[in-house]
Image (cartoon, rainbow, N blue to C red; front, side, top):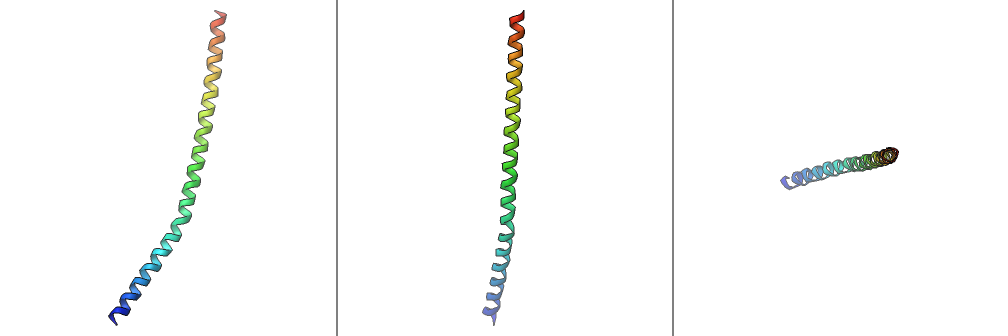
Amino acid sequence: MRSARRGTTWLALLVACGLLSLGALPGCATTQQTAAKKQAESKRILEARERRQEKRSKSDQQEGKQR
């Protein structure tokens, strides 16, 4: 009887680990989606900063020509 009980315990442990793994998979996808959104947001911020700096440098150059 002892080996049957041990087999049942292992089976229960295996099932529990499998269920935990299945539950973690959607979490990984959500994390990847969040990371992609943050990366896209960072890219937009950097592009906007670059445009502002270009405008600022053009206006500084025009002021230099006027002096």
